[in-house]
Image (cartoon, rainbow, N blue to C red; front, top):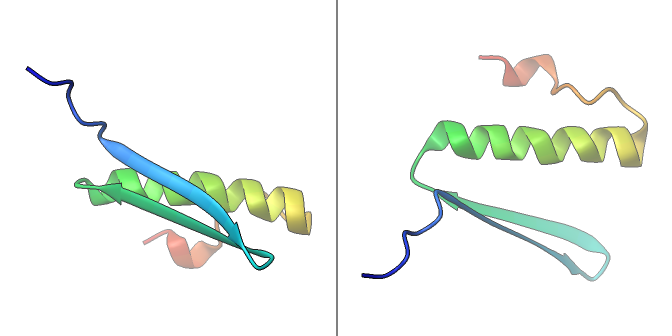
Length: 59
């Protein structure tokens, strides 16, 4: 038997000075949480904004 596939796969690449992030999972809430974590970190690090996601994301 082979190893179980990870529940979430992700990758990040810099292309021409643009950060490209991608995720793959069957569970959409897992994708949403992963995106929110990365986006929150980028907001705080690159823009000096709070880590929380904008209110639009709280649906």
